[in-house]
Length: 276
Length: 165
Image 1 (cartoon, each protein chain N blue to C red):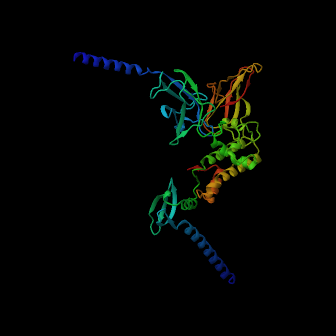
Image 2 (cartoon, rainbow over the protein chains, first blue to last red):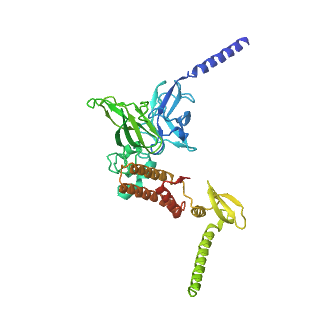
Image 3 (cartoon, chains in turn cyan, brown):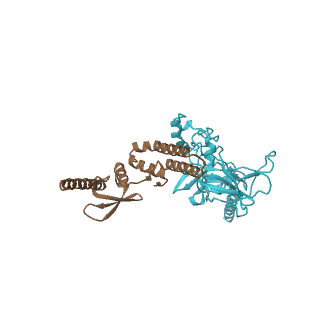
């Protein structure tokens, strides 16, 4: 009898040890970050009270509030809990990732990008920009956005269906494609609206004002190059006032507005306007 | 002078009748019978919209009562919205409205900052309103928006004062 009891005890201990050994140790998370935007390409701002939800096989792994103004091309960051072997609530390398964005009281699907993100190595990070909407053509331009261009295409005899609207078209003939204007937040069916500097003017004794029409949810930088032959550009320090020393390298616009950014060049240099 | 007296009085009387007819017509348009989805008839004058509710003053009383718009059939809802000069944007047109609104705002900013001519600005306005009208056409057929309400929305778009429902 004693022997049987001892054997059972040993079996239970062995079973417990086995079960214990099967639970993989938690690992540092895999991080996904980037820009979440609506179907018109406008990046969500903190005011939208939006949240990004990351899922693996339909199971939520993490969610975060959208926070704007921290850095260009960045308004969300989620952490995927990791494990070395398949474990409920954790990801392993190679798991397919899907995202949803919650705003206006509803959960919205995110259109498939040109690449399908997967979970990478533990303690690494992946930049992944998210656009809410449907991309039935897989060309990067949301169907919801194309729907808005369709009346113009029909009126001009360019097509009658969403499939006739291509990202590479320059419908309005302003030298910027539909997709470039989608990214920049300008109107792709209006030839007078395209990304450009409207005015450059001296402001005060040592600053230069650069004026342009900004779009909501877009970030602007003024890269400078001291040597155009080398074609090396770095974001210039800038200010929102000619009276305030430069204190930033980018400006995020929350609305359609004329913006003037001030540069304080100390030597001759070339500048350009970048929009993201 | 005496000969013109009766003519003047007749003219004044005619003007009064015309004025009363005009006022009467306005009153009749504002009041009326309203049949809900259950077939019940409400005799009342619609006064204003508040969110998704409509306020009436019942005939023969001065009491204001509010009912959800949804209790009325869609054509009746549109009749109420038109009567109360509602310019909110119906579901299904909000994206088109946002796009047209942004287009017009940007064109206005470009025009006001001297980047485009008045003719270019006018062209942008007409293009944006034409595209919005195109997007609204199916909703008019489906009686989700009346032509009168669309014209009010287009007017507000032109003036930059529309509100999203």
